[in-house]
Image (cartoon, rainbow, N blue to C red; front, side, top):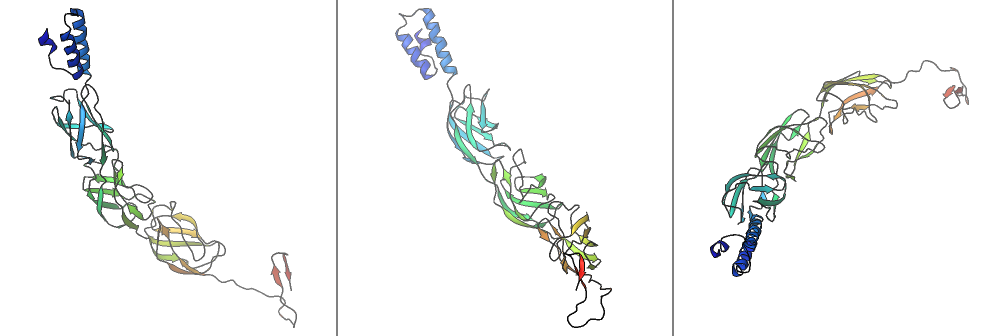
Amino acid sequence: MAKFCLGAGSRLGAKVRQFVCRNSSAFGRLHLLLAFLLCGVAASQAAPVLSSISPTSLTSGMQVTVTGSGFGASQGSGHFKLYNEYETIVSWSDTQIVAVVGSGVLAGNALVYQGAWSNSVPYTMAAPVVTSISPTSVSPGMQMTINGSGFGTTQGNYGSVPFYNNYGTVVSWSDTQIVVTVSANTLPGNVAVRQSGVASNAIAYTMIPSTVTSISPTAVSPGMQMTINGSGFGASQGPYGSVPLYNNYGTVVSWSDTQIVVTIPNDTLPGTVKVKQNGATSNGIAYTMIPSTITSISPTAVSVGIFPAQWDPKLGIHVT
C-alpha cells in the first residue's frame, strides 16, 4: 500500500497520499479508494504554467515560442491559443511549444490548454512598414503597388489598405508587396496598410487632374449650354465632380469621362472654365459672356434735364 501511496502525481495528490499512508491503519479500503479518486481529480485539474513568449511582438506567418511547464510530453488534446485563434503547432514538449502565428491574429494574451487553461501572457502585433508606393499620382481605376514588410503572407480577415477617404480594392497580397485598385471618389491624401489591428506608417499620394481640351461655344450667356471636352473627368460626376466658372459653378446636364455638358447660371462673369474631380483641378480654358444688344431708345431726341426712358424693375414701368 505504501508503494501505491508514494506514486507520482500533483502536489495536492502527493500530500493527500502522504497523509493517508501515515494513517492507513485508521482508514479502511473505502477511505483509501476515496483518497485515490481525490488524487486523480486533483491531478487531472492541474493547469499548465506559461512563463514566457518569444518574441513578444508578433507578425502573421512568423514562429512564436512559449516556455513553461505542464504542457505535456506531446500535444495530444492540447492547444496553443493567441487572442482570437488557435495556432498551428510546429513542436510540442512539456516545457516548450513552437507555433506559427496565423494571418488573422489580433493583439492580446497567449494561453496553453492541456486539460485546463494556463495563465495568460500578453503579446502585441508589430505594425507593418510601408517603404514606397508606385505610382504616387493616381486616378480611380488605376492600380497602385505598395512595398514594405510585415503585411502578412495573406490579407486574412484584418488586412486592408486605407486611402484618405476609402479603401483600395486588393488585387494581390504578400508579406512585402500589395497591389490595389484605386476606388472611385478617392481624394488625395495618405495611404497606409492595416494588418491584425495595427496600422503602418502612411505615404502621401495625389490624384491626377482632368484635362480640358476644348469648350463649345466659347462665348455664352446665362441659360445657354456649354460642352466641355477632354479626359479624366470620371465615368460619372460622383460626389466630388464639379465645373467651376469664374465666379460660380455650371449646372451639370450630362457627365462622362471625356465630355461634360453644363448650363450657364445667372450672374456668371467672363473668365476660365475648369473641371474638378476627386480633389484635383484641371487646366482652364477661357470663355466670354455674350454682350447685351440695344435695339432702341425712346425718345431719340432729348434736351437738358430729360433722360431716355429706362425700365425700373421695382416699379415695373419705364421712367425718365
